[in-house]
Image 1 (spheres, rainbow, N blue to C red):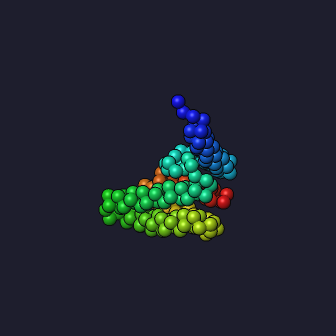
Image 2 (spheres, helix red, strand yellow):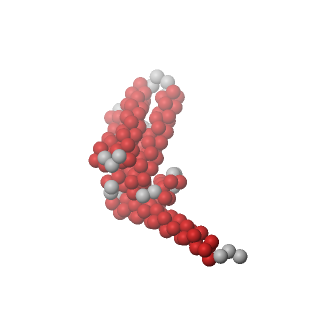
Image 3 (cartoon, one colour):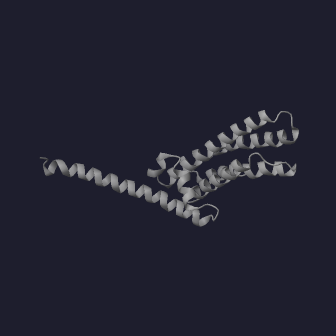
Length: 178
């Protein structure tokens, strides 16, 4: 049989863990409520699902969520860059699509660098620098889509551009609260 002196420290650790977990979950919940309230295109459920891509988001504070959001968006930019390379290889010499694809490739490559800088800015407390870099990265999908529209060509990246735009909006909204 365990003595009270043995049970109390274990009980205290368990209680502390539950409080910390509840507080972090509340931070994620509050953050996603705020994001969805400030941007009608971003539903609360979409925000929560977005953050579930990273297990650390369940225990992160707001600054941690901003870094996590930025890293998730960076991964999306890298993935879009890979998709662009695949499409470019499959399209041969069709200049009508190769030109906009090359522009999009450059835009998303720059976005990766801007998102790296944004994450560093958040981590070092330089939130305005982070917001500037996030805003620059957020321009990539719209500029990419404009290139296809100007040539009257259907964009093969419409889905990726739309998703990236939404994800950037989440990262911007969270970072803007810091």
